Amino acid sequence: MTATRFLLDKSAFARWSNPAVAVVLDELDRRGLLTVTAVIEMELLHNARDRTEADELQEMLSGFDYLPCPDEVWDRAKELHRAALDRGFHRALSIPDLVIAACAQRHRATVLHYDGDFD
Image (cartoon, rainbow, N blue to C red; front, side, top):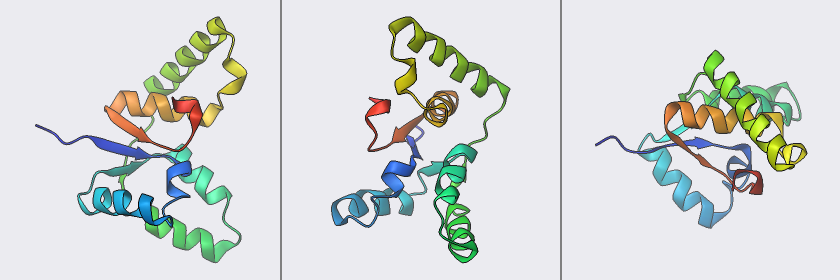
């Protein structure tokens, strides 16, 4: 049986310094179960204060498995957006969150987050 992989959202990554969160993330990291994707990398790198911090962050992110976002991920993100339109809450969902959710579905990963948009 394959272990569940976790797509590490920026909201969880940002809380890694919290001891209660670190216990969980450190164990998942040790077991090689944390993943990232391009959208998450860009969100995290966008918050870097300077080139040095961006380089350090990129080095850290390179240690996680990478989940690609081929065209079918983007197509699924559009489907999710249309479903949200039908329910009237499409503006509450960010484009990155739609892509992250679609990527997680495509790769059968669980989004690890502290973001109500994924609930």
